[in-house]
Image (cartoon, rainbow over all chains, first blue to last red; front, top):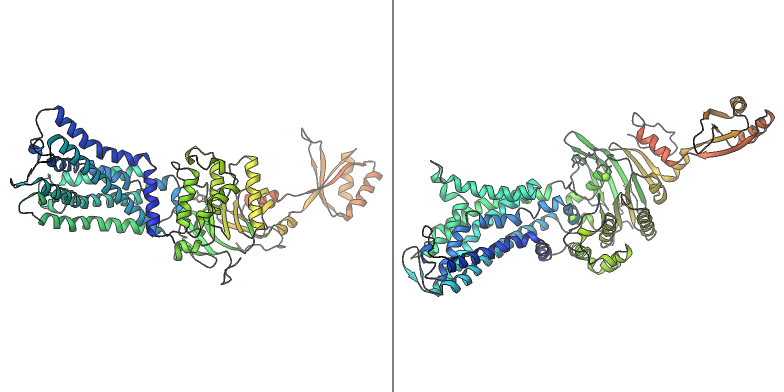
Length: 271
Length: 328
Ligand SMILES: Nc1ncnc2c1ncn2[C@@H]1O[C@H](COP(=O)(O)OP(=O)(O)O)[C@@H](O)[C@H]1O
Ligand SMILES: [Mg+2]
């Protein structure tokens, strides 16, 4: 049987051959560029968001602002765009039967697809982070960053903390990937899976503002999109990071397990 | 061509597939021996595709088992498809990649030297010139060819084809059939589903005729041909008098008048052994109604096919048991 890396590489090549792939990546690049350009041509700064006040003092403040902004729907959308499509699209155009009648087991194809969807989310996040840093530094300079505790860290230390922040941000993003993947397998419908994953992400955020449900907040997947902020405190607060790790796993693992089981066993009647 | 264990290419027992309250396949036993070109013949909706899906492990049987060279695709996954290739319904590819790129992808999923067979496979189906174009722009016939090329990459010992000539133009059909004949002569075992008796008659040595998920006939094509039977067609100078002679003649039965059509004048039909024909012609001349035309008309396999798949109720021993009728 072909090796997993071979199958995974072909999943990536398929992504690279599709326009929708570049839609998500394009947005990931465009958003920081637009933000930086807006800073150049406009007065003022976003005051009501953490780090918003400092975007003119240090380019390093721009990635955190975009991470906060992006957690509402932008990153869930980008992640779901590919993860929700990666199985359902093949169901719809009938290629699932084509690849499932070769010499590669369903389980391996599923793992390759899950890895490819995760890779895509990671690349989009990294791209946004990198472009935000470059654009930010170009507009506001490579200057020390004021943390959430009000302390100031050097520019190089700030860069390091932002890199860690991106890694932690990846955890809830993988949770969204898992949900979208599950919907992709179950619904056989790309649009339903993408929209469904996005809706779940939005509804989870809504839950926190409902009266009486506030206690749930620490255990919601979407709350973990703020866990990285622990890095931008002095001293660093690891508690939200640790919690994000297991809360995200609590969402992702069952979703992936159900998706896997369904994919491996189900009837392929499309095409 | 059979593997070490001696298991036949296809061995299915009691296959049933239900979709909700639709029974697509209602208990099919199927054995395809090495070297067979086996026709799985039935009208639309008879459950042909569903059987092929079960054989390929794409869907789970509600009951029964399917084995390819002794391996169950449900238990052994892709390993059960070793040496097996084919497609169900129209072959599907990634429209946003070229034909060649699609084959490269599939060869990667095959491993085992499949990539080295791409050029040859494209050449065999005459798609070399179009290999660089996106599949999205291919015609139905080109996709069908690419589907065959994709199957050939696996260097199959057993080829499963689901109505491969459907939707092809006459030249495409001819090429497809020539290819099946050639692969068979090179030793590939073929299971071919079809709704066209002439196709099966041309290509296959064995046939199962299916109807609403059940096999109503199974046997070699020769036996089917033998049981088809036939009748005689007679035109004379005086058909009224001739009909009288026919009714009185020994060894002649089932006499009937056939009204004329735009392309053929009216005639008489009857059934008789060849031995009775000489005496009959003399009797016709004596009666003053000499034959203008007296010719045997062989029933076509198509007629047999329609009898088996259209009559009510299911044909259960409705034919003389000369070949191997399948107990329903
Ligand atoms: N996925 C499915 N869901 C429900 N019914 C199906 C499905 N696939 C096939 N059928 C039904 O099963 C029967 C056999 O279908 P099929 O195997 O495609 O026939 P054939 O290939 O001989 O034309 C048909 O009545 C069809 O409607
Ligand atoms: Mg069919």
